[in-house]
Image (cartoon, rainbow over all chains, first blue to last red; front, side, top):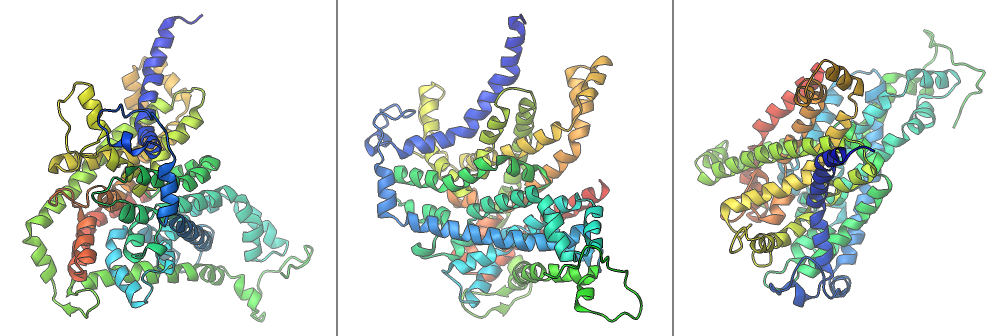
Length: 281
Length: 310
């Protein structure tokens, strides 16, 4: 029997700090959840103990889905995220492959260019970008955000995938080419399948980044019908003097669900992508 | 697709052999550039062009939807004489510096705690990362409610815990608002540090610790002379990236305080948004946004040099 001393040490070094971190990180989500199912008479009465729900209700969810454009926003968000993720993973792969595995004139310049575009922050681009989108007459269309999100996602995908592509031994590709495969066939049939984890990481990351995008959507999407969930929630559900917190928390929770589901299925790929190098914070 | 039989190995190109399309596509240079072209064109059109157009705009007086007028460095001169500009500069640097220290220390502590073996570690890791993956605007909305002037749960806990007698206005008071932003940014970014540093810690061989222990090293010495040196590269890269992206932070501040009260929490990005978008002064807005460039260039060059050296 290992004495109580070891257990005490373990509580002090592991369980207590771990519990503190978990409470700190997860409390806002708990708060979102219970706020979204509290009736207004509990939410706005300072004398009622706020940490638990006394009489849960789904009223805020019903109101959110019937009285606001939340479902349209969700559809817009998903559509934009799926399209931009697909475009970015494909174009990112096409850029990363030669950069990681080939020697050609201009390689160094392109590599530096990709790194630079990855690190250029959005605030540096959004004002000129708004003028460009206006001149293209794309304001209030989802095309505007579908064109602008990949500016963040393509360099990210290329950056992440270069590491994976470099790890595949050149001999495998050479063997395939000796057997008559073209460069393209060697890529699609030999190298890419071996890099499936990398492609999954890039896709999941790009998807969460696309769901998280806010600035371009805020600038380009001024009509309610074309808005995404984050912008719709911030601009339309916060209504000055009215008590709206239940509905707002319901929107925040439901808006986080798609990302959370994808994340829970692929958490290992997500962490792999996170630690594979560098990541948008 | 035309795949030759496996038995026919393609001979090396011989001088005088006619150039075929297929032969051309097999050249590394041609193949590479065909693959690169769509992405390169896209990035040139939607990153490089706006970037340089932004520099051009910053030299103009350019009200939205009207033609611009070249004014040279007038916008920058006006900014240099504007007290708000310097306040925004101080805000930005304080925001970046303090959150970085908090995220780094908190994340390191998180990584060290998580680097012990226990049941359910992967599940715990998944939960700890949640603040980082959930859309920032949505989690920030939860923080608005947590910090609400009337119904703040933080105030409720502090009052009922006997720490204070009446609640604070977390987002309404100038200095408290900045600290509130710092707390929320730390909450969101700390797991990123924690999980990447944990991955770094897990590459340290237990043999190293054993050897150090045999040599009589204390826990502190093992941390200083084994853990830190090994994890230093990860630490530096994670921090540099985090700093670069915190400089560009917009949505958390926009959602939580809009830069207020009275510019107390404006950073370059939110102030540029106010001037360029809400105020419609594209030229001045572009000039404000460009003000982060010098700090950014220093960071990016530093990072590049460090990565080259590794």
